[in-house]
Amino acid sequence: MSFTPRALSVAIFFGLSVGGLSLACSSASPKAAPPFDAAAESAKLMARDAHWADLATAAKNVDSVVSYWTDDAVIMEPGQPVVEGKAAIRKFVEDAFKTPGKMAYMRATDEMNEPGPKGAPITLHMRGYSIWRIDSDGQWRCVVDIANEAPPPPNATKS
Image (cartoon, rainbow, N blue to C red; front, side, top):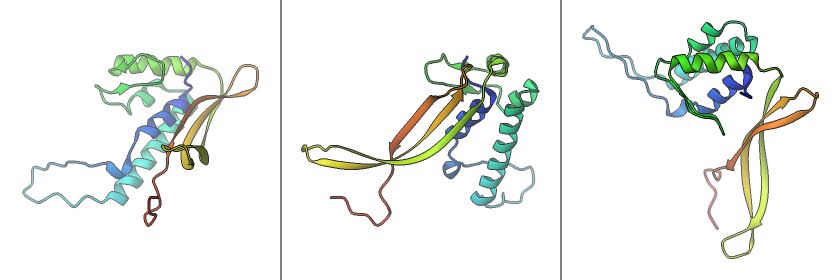
């Protein structure tokens, strides 16, 4: 397994969409649930994710890290089989804790020129993340490189 504890937390972080998060609340009291406060929930989620990342980075307590997943959670990593359920996730984390090395990630924006649909050059405005690992020989190597086209600015017109 090639993911270190930090990579686990980063990979999970990439999967989150705070803007699309919705929570359903139920209560035994007849009072209506308070309105959803996206900013407050976003802050709570980011704090929880940061704490999880710290635990995973420390690589000391498998139970603490695994406790952040639900019993029916699924992990899908590039080129790896699906990891499904707490028992499999526990093994995944245990194996990750045994993996030596340091990981880092970088967020980037870039421009890429390529031929457009009619052959004329077009410029794509790209955004992405790359995840890097120091291998046993001391060299940083890219483990995951993700990029996609950034949406146009709100008041841009398509040509």
